[in-house]
Image 1 (tube, rainbow, N blue to C red):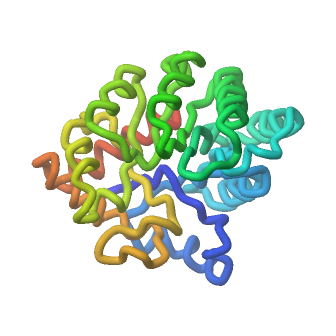
Image 2: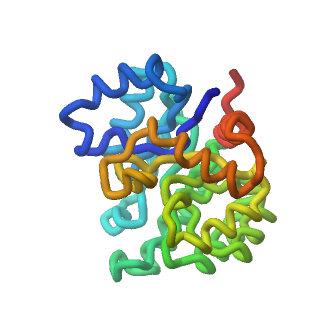
Length: 259
């Protein structure tokens, strides 16, 4: 069994005490084969690239999450462009998108930089990793405006309805599914996952966040993905081996990894 964690944050300070020890042991001691570390701002994007360059099994996505676009400038787009062009391990622009859970940054500011980063991805020929929270329709409308169907990518930590998933499916997007699907109260997500074709699902941890049951509330890492696989297998009525294999191949297609 090979498992691809398509969305992790090993640059997070939660791993400062044992990052190297954990990442050095991950491959020989687990079924994890590959990881994409995801940037949230310039510093984390740079560190994601550094980690990807250090570990053969790791890739990087670079970008500004909605929470951090309030102070973005055109120079940051130029810096992301240079970072992507100078590093072959950069496989996506992300995570980018909209988050209306909090009042800041203002919606107009989020819209501006979401569109700008989608434009950068299209220019570079890279897929996008989308963060969308409490902003389903605006996310979808801006994706349509940017012709995201020509860019491709994944809706990270998918949390919307089965009906909304059909709209993203029409654009050819993948859906990042992680620990939340194992929570007993995640009935809407379970229904959505049951309806989404397995060919459009990829696995993710979002670690150190969103550890699956039975570790909910603890620090998450890639070794917990078998719990997510088991839940998806149950919802789909297929074997855990099939889930791992198909989502692994999906992840390579998502990130356009040839080997």
